[in-house]
Image 1 (cartoon, one colour):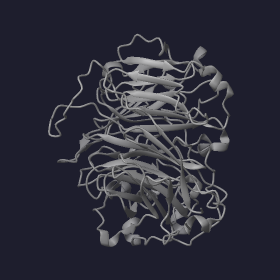
Image 2: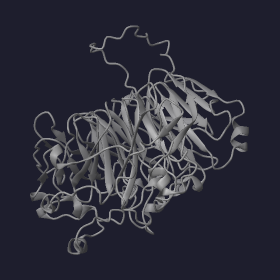
Image 3: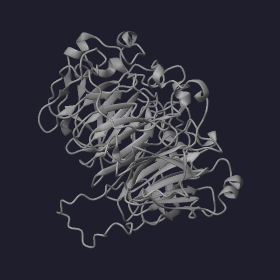
Length: 591
């Protein structure tokens, strides 16, 4: 049936019981103040070793799109709701896309974004280390570490890897103290290739390195509730522990991602409000903030902010430091409250970071320069260039992602809303109302986006999957005076992936240089109050369905389907409509 998404698979990963060393809590008291291990639900990463599974470089509005469904075996968009805009334009000949795991594809950044830390000779491999790809040190299946409880490897792992199709997906999943490697191309996909159980640490997040992946090598990093990090190579079953016993940071790792284009460096968000860059091959050493760290203007870093939402913007260690023998490579203190998520932009230049304090920050991490988007008035001091300040409607932000072309950022959180932010114009575009509880994951469908029309999906603790459509022309635009003032971040984001719709005069002044700065930019900080509902476009969903009896925590689009996961370990795959070559069949479904 056109427009209907059929439940293809319901894969259930068992939630592991507490380790015997942990006394189970029989009747947990919701008012108890005893700290409990942080949990992350069931989070997945999908990996394909075939380029055919990658999203299109320029989004095709003609191809099928994806959707999640109700507890019955199909999902259908509401018959009376088609695309919210008729602004259909053919795909342009340039643009970007993201890989299935969310990391920007290297092809997007050729000739645009330099490597992180470029120019620091202390980070450059020398002599025998040049061009050498290493594996971790220790065998996880034979580990005697007290951190690892058990590792179960499929007895026919080598044969299964050899016989599998090259274009199928691997799935890696963390669920509490377990981490599993699955083959979604296999008829026995419920049989894990590898399952690792940890002792007291819950695995909260993980990521796959898209640069180093091959048929014989996969680099994975995992972040834990203890603050520890594991670098794992599943084919050889080797691993290395980093931040061991919290020597660098003792707080849980809420998000972890490889730095785009890097073989060794990855970024971890800790729950004390810090972002830390690690090198998978370097040893750890006790960390003390470096003295006399200077910002991009050569002035000393200081704390800034007042009251509950005070934000510290410290570079406690810069990537340009000459002391790079041990981890960390960089250490940035953003806030006194936990960082919940971050995402790299498709052009590999910026990070969007969301926190429990209701802030969205856009960071030019290549320059270690910060653009704060946060509630309440803060003093700018001499810390970074504070150019624009935004806030959630209320409560913290829990999830964030970029549009495939880098023009928009989505956030979802505790206000039950999804917000669409225009990065180039430094303003909120719309609030999306439809969830009945916290929004836990947001994701664009790159097969259903072009440079004017966008499709994205969201899931939440209300057990619902929602699909949304918006286009450049359908949403009313704020007055020009409110979005193009001196100091607007539009002057920072004139890269090729963000073709801001400004006048020719303005566009001619923009340079594709993220470090562009003037004294006027620092002096004219723009503080945006929370936009009232009366002046902000409200976007309704085109589809809303309960798809699981338990709260949802993750979703992803593939070319053929949508995949969701819930806190209890169910991974559901919904196939896209088969007759989807005709665009109207997707927007005007029939039953």
